[in-house]
Image (cartoon, rainbow, N blue to C red; front, side, top):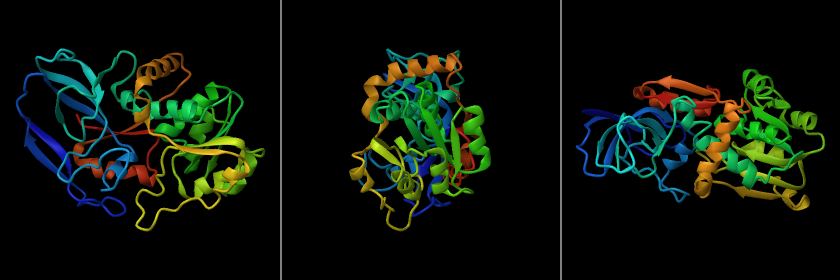
Length: 333
């Protein structure tokens, strides 16, 4: 059995180019006792993957040159060699990487129920992006009823869920997104109270319009100028959650930090980074709650699916061009 894989060939400077990955075909090895073979159906494409390509200290080891590109995945167990926890036909999510098949001892894989939600939802709203939103806004952001919440990257996989959870908790939610279509999606479909189009509107004017009395939580997915602007609107004891900085990931110049950081001092606010891996003990309970909200129609999920492992790079770059809506997913088979 042959396996197509996207291997990291070179560490990119700036945007990944045609020399960053290499598509290869290898033979799937025979299973040893205690191993399973998973056929990946969908692969999750996330901004964090860009950071994993850099050879620098981070919260997770970088992808090694020549290794399969790390990615979350969901697929079907098609072969088992005496594994106590999995059987043929199980649908599982884990870290299968950008490849058609993955041989594993089962570590990091969890079964999912496709009767409750489509397979791809388990690498989106019911997967790591959704869990990031859940823990990021509720625990790190210490969300309270009545808070004014500002979310950047609000039409993306994490931001869209952050805003919906905040609305469920009776908060005022303003999203920042790029383009009128995305802003309409936030207000008309997801129930946000307002949306600022950073590509076409004046950001500071938008903040003045929608957040006249300031914000209690800023959930940041983009960094750069938008983070700097948000810092000017902090209320007393506000919380800034640093989840990502997609505007900075492909920089060929030094990362741009916030010049308005002293407003944290003035307002006695906090700025804290969050990584979903730190909340692993709570995954199961959070997933149950998210699933319940979805079943009740209180939480919406949107996946933007593109096909073909050979189209991985072009699809991945949509994260940075903004040419996608909701969770970006690559369909492998």
